[in-house]
Image 1 (cartoon, helix red, strand yellow):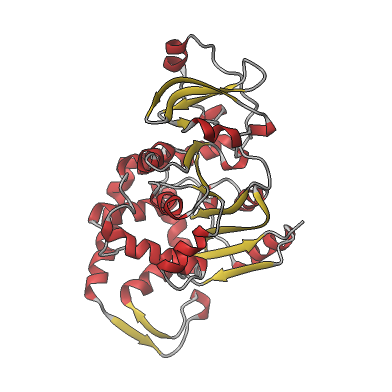
Image 2 (cartoon, rainbow, N blue to C red):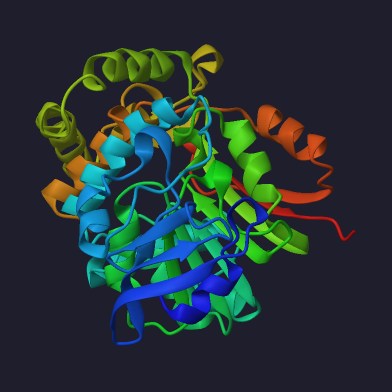
Length: 374
């Protein structure tokens, strides 16, 4: 992090004082952020300030020994933190392995084309203009940081990325050359920013991996300034067969180690690849409403993918990346699915009047909401 970035970091409303232990190219690589209580402090590790406590707190034994410190006093953590820690294991492993996801040229057309659909924008030029109009942006769950990088390259103001997993370190390494980008490691339920701070918050495919999706939406919504916008993408509740298959496979795959789960997903990935390469289409004259299958033409791979089994395959990705996408679906401890009616109820409960559901794919719900002016 750059020293100037610390001014906006206020966990539980507390102002912080920066102490620098090592600095390279304008970044504090190791240091701490201390409150007015000397015993309450947060480490900066590998360029990333860390605000995790309880079961997610990193081992600071060596850090404290290097700098003559006593372990910091931390606030009590939420009861759900232990549950979140299980999901963190999945994503920490994932983003240590796939550090270049989204940064490869062959990934960008697919991924940023998908962002255009999610935000209801016609093309990449409109996506760039969208971010050029923002002054302070937060991305929650940046993964490799490929989208954080795109945002920061186009936003004229400050861009922050927050991740609870080791993805924070991957994002830092992939954005450290950008002067307007800061990465923090924290639980989004305890995001270390004042309320009403950001022009735009984006949480793409993240909130359903928390213990409670609705509470996660509410926690981030508080950080949006009046008149600002909030985008989130959550899993959609699928048809009966797909719900059964998802539940059955997760029950069997979640207890596996990450390595074991990657191996277990290989058959699913191969099925997706071979069905995709068939490039076969069928036409159904009649729908099957009980299974959520509409009438019309269906690509066979997509028909199975959306209604029976998530067997992802995209030729823009190599085999390992395709397999990772299937792993991402079946291994996380939390992976909730929701309906549009459910999500709409959350928005109305927050007093949101202006929002849109953008049709980006049948698997998810893309929501762009505007916080009313005070």
